[in-house]
Image 1: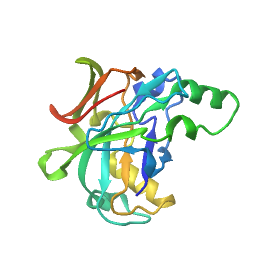
Image 2: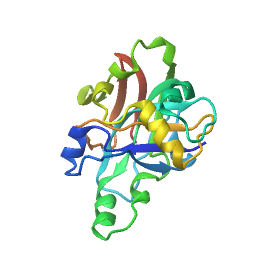
Image 3: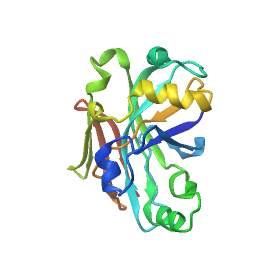
Image 4: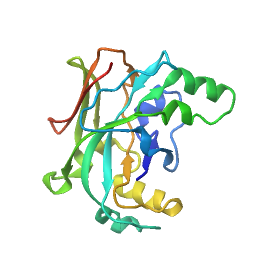
Length: 203
């Protein structure tokens, strides 16, 4: 199982990060050790002082595929969920300033909490999905898949040109604007179409 993350897939988030809006999907990967499941608590790592939340809709790949045509991409996932792409922003900035890769800011242990998954068949329009992130009851992020720069199908088709997708792989599809810091004691709750799919504490 691998975790594939799409960066800068919402224009307003790209702008808040002072990044260019990409002409094609940008992706990076996290190892399986980044996964945190079943509402388990997240333990704040001691190597960062500026850990940021990034809520994302997550696709679960349902069958293997390589060089998938975009018109068939919808057949390669049956479930969707929510996840957090935790980012050690201070570490990331240090790496960027030196022109170095910044996997250690994104790919550390348990940096990809995921919640429950629901069948795609329960959702009327995957291109019109509302999702939100609340921390301690306060709204932090709000997004709708209508604002994606690259649709789910486009992402699957593009990534599969370079990386073979396998059953169980997860694709984090990008975060909307509003990313920001978390701290110990925070309770993180993610909603997809008003249904809680993600709920955990930071310790």
